[in-house]
Length: 106
Image (cartoon, rainbow, N blue to C red; front, side, top):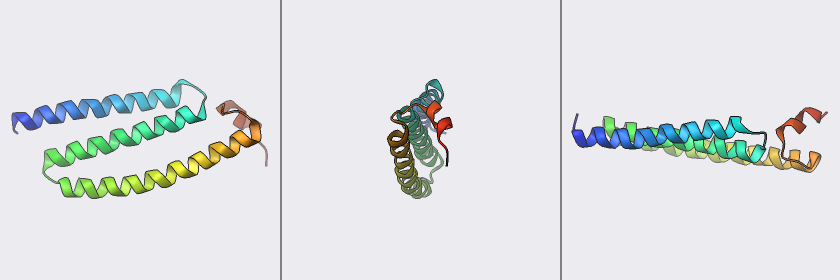
């Protein structure tokens, strides 16, 4: 492999791993539902970045781009539904604390 390619892979790959770790931390650190949604977004962005780097390193950038476009569409739908659920929980409980979800019935 080319040394420039290895350098690009290590730089952006390590950034993708860092984004992934920050996303996991956002999900697990607290009980705020908005923070959890931001953590999910960071996880998806880390996977997207890693797919770009892997596609570039393997020479299959077109395949990586098509996978990323599909991921973006799925991500938008998923986050839209999740935000709708969070808004419904906020209207019902008056709080964004995930511990209040246990009190919901019916």
